[in-house]
Structures are given as C-alpha cells and as structure tokens.
Image (tube, rainbow, N blue to C red; front, side, top):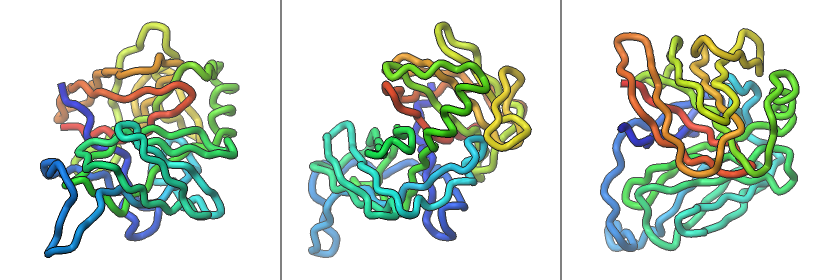
Length: 245
C-alpha cells in the first residue's frame, strides 16, 4: 500500500495561486529540539491558509485575505491562530515526522480542512492549506443531492503526476454507504457522478465515516494502480493531492 505522504502543499513563492506539491520524502525525526550552529530551532509548521475559488482546481487557491483561522495538530494537540490574512506559525510540543493538520474557521464561512503533512526534522515552512467556502459545499450538496451529516466527513483529492500537474482518466471504486465518487465537471465548481477525472484531476467522496480510509486509484497508463490512506474526520473535508507512479 502507498501510504499517503503528499499533502496539498503550496509553496508561497508566486502567491497562493501557484501550487507545487511536495514529493520528497522527509528526513528522519531527530526526536528532540533541533540545534543549528548552536542556535535552537523550535519544531514548527508555518504557512498560510488559502481559499479555493473552484473546488475542481487546486490551482484556484488564493490567499484568504481578511480571514482568521484556528490551526491544530492532532498528534500533539498544539493550537495556534492565524493573523487576519491566514498566515500562521504553529510550534509543536515535540518534533514530528507526520502531522494531521486541521484548519478551522471560527466564523464557519469555510469548511474545516484536514490534511496530512510530512515534516523534515520537525519543521515544515512555506506551505498553504486550502479551505473550501461553506457556500460551495452547500451548493454541491444541493445540486448533487449529497447529504451533509455533521457526524461524517468527506474528501477532495487531486490526482497529479511527478511534476504536480493534474492527471485525467483516474477512477476509484464506489464505497458502501458513501456518496460518490464524483469527478471534476465541465463548469466551475461542478461535479459529475461516474466516469473518471478530467482536466483538473479531482476525485470527491462524501458522507464518509470518520477514521482512516483506504482508497484504490486506477489511473491510465503509464501510471500504476495504488492504494492511499486518508484521514477522515467528522464535519470536515480532507483535502490533499495524491501522486501517481
């Protein structure tokens, strides 16, 4: 099984509208405070929250100007608040190699995002975490008849190649007691039931039980079918990119 290590991470180089997933494996966890040239470096994750203007396309994520979020790490229960533009640094109480990260909007204008981050020596910088407007989720629910149950979760995953570009023609199996899979449709924010990914590489499943979910992706040649594990949480949306091999 290919255990998911690629979060939908944005390098804040050209702005939040340019996304570059991280493909490199992280360095080993050093198991303590990091020292660099005699200076102590506190383990942390830093970056910015970005808002998806089109749920189909991870490249539509723009800086969440004027928005404040609460960010948390599940493994250590560390919590921090962003500034008014979604910029954050969250120090962790111990160095982590893997962090289950949540971005929560206290005003409920955006759906809570869950994603898995991999850190090098307890540190991850220059990332952006995408969030989806609650209004976009409601519209998708109304148009597609998708139930919104606060005791269950959902995911948006973007299938990408080794350069981070979307891959079309990827499918995944229907799951028992879940809504979907849906794929990116022809219009902004539109989902279609069945078929496969299109130009944006989106796969979405809704009404999922909380816990660890393993899905199998079947891509076109030359890529190989593989399994991926995703964290699903109640009343939240798991958002990540999945690298195909």
